[in-house]
Amino acid sequence: MSAEEVAAADLKSARARLADARLNLSYTKVEAPVTGLTSRALKSEGTLLSGPQDLLTTVSRLDPIWVNFGISSNDQAAIRSDEASGKLVLPKDRRFDVAIKFEDGHVYSRTGKLVFTDVRVNNQTGTSDARAEIANPNGEVRPGQFVRIILKGAHRPGAFAVPQRAVQEGPQGKLVYVMNKEGKAEPRPVTLGDWSGTDWIVLSGLNPGDKVITEGLMKVFPGAQVVVGDPNAPPPAAAPKK
Image: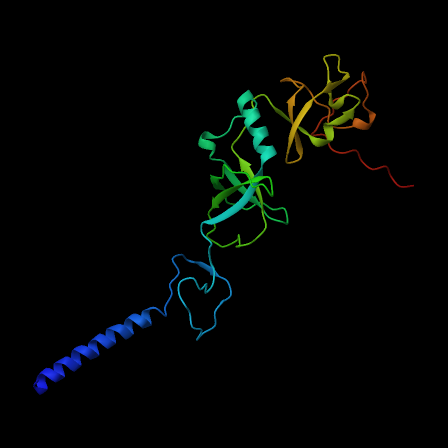
């Protein structure tokens, strides 16, 4: 073999070793498939890794962010029953709008959509897993943060909302006082649903046009004369000090 052939073979071998070194070097760089926040490093620099099963860190995507929560089997059964009886109308394809309420009580300015509901029930928690997807461009919602979920989009035909203070407890259950045609207080038994903010949802017992008494209930009794006040009237002036 001539000197030129030996040199060419050495060059080919060197190029092969260089390509192999570059390949090995590329294995030392791990790129995340998503953009987000990383947790602490689980492996320190210089650690020998055995393969893909070695976890380096966790990357949490921020925008959009996923919110995982559970829906109890009791709630699901009640929803199915009310939907079947026509008492509850769900949004098309059950694509609920989703709002987030933080621990301090304020509601996140952006809403999202319910994107997944598991048909299985967890036998340990009695809930089905669900997931909402919400835009989070400023990173206000953080990975691992505790929040409450509000599902919006369903409505109850013929239901009414009355202030919680208007609902009383009677011998036969819940009731409200309404003003009848004679201007007197009349107790009206009602069937209640859930709370909506500061209101009770009344499923039955009220009719359109009923005037529910919400103030001065300590003085109200069946047959009491009702005086309707002017909501725009100024408050009474304080008595002068002597």
